[in-house]
Amino acid sequence: MKCEPRSPNLDHRTPNIEKAPLLPFPRPTLRIATRASHLALWQSRYIKDLISAIAPEVTVELVHVSTTGDRDQVESLRTLGSFGVFTREVQLAVLDGRADLAVHSLKDLPTDGPKELTLAATPVRGLTADALILPIGQTEISNVGSLPLVARVGTGSPRRQAQLRYLRPDLQLSEVRGNVETRLRKLDEGQYDALILAAAGLTRLGLADRIHSEIVPPEMYPAVGQGAVGVECRSDDIDLRTLLSRIADSPTVSAVTAERSLLSALRAGCHAPLGVQTKVDADILFLEAVVLSHDGQSRWMAHASSDVSAAESLGKEVAELLLAQGVDRVLRGPIR
Image 1: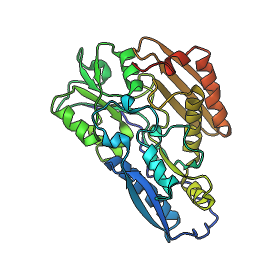
Image 2: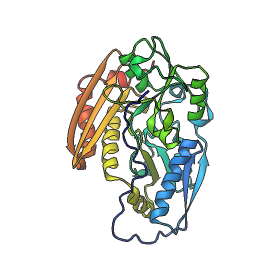
Image 3: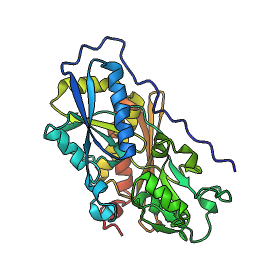
Image 4: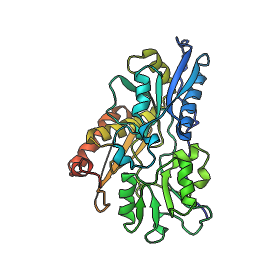
């Protein structure tokens, strides 16, 4: 079987580093607060390597933090709460001085975080697409459309569920918890006929061979910030903010700024049935967004473009276009 072509993985592209020499960082050690999952550790080591490349004299340490989402592997994420399930405790480690910076999957980071913290850097973005994962040895299915009737699909994301219901209302959708390896084991044991996972996470964990095909717009729009790594530090830590700005990637920053501005303007949480697609072409930023009812029977879309320097305003503009269509009743209503 020939899989659909995948977009390039950009995680290891050289970050934008100014030609002017960087002054020595005034502290000998930096501590990164991170979850202890394999994917979170990959992301934190990635940031560690980027920092070491521009400040080799600084020792970078990882501080492992357990989050609500990590400790409870049974309850639905929606039951645990829509905001900060995987980020609150990591942020607290920076606020109380146990760490200097925090590394997150940006799609998990709420837009209304503590004012004492700032999103100081977003390096080169990885894959943004969702991925269809099938049991080992399954070769007869090519994409979501060819899944058997009433196939059992594992995904707890309201965004993915709503878009799957729009495409295939017959599918049986259910939550699947645990780390990536646990989810794949459940799939291969026959508990599900397919999984939907983020392509970036699988690629970063060396599991790209499990990606059967990417599910891309217009079939499925990614989450806000999907595929991006966010680095937070204390707002008043000017030295560290200056250092971290050196590992940021300008096109990625513009894209995620627009996406997060959209999310904030809609006052929607990380688990809202909202998908986005951003593209940067020269100095032009394009943003398209989709909102669906939780049952997948209704879908609203809006798009606009702007100069990359107006990314935040672009997000607000697209949000206003969606709100004019009445999507607030879906985004702020109860999650079913």
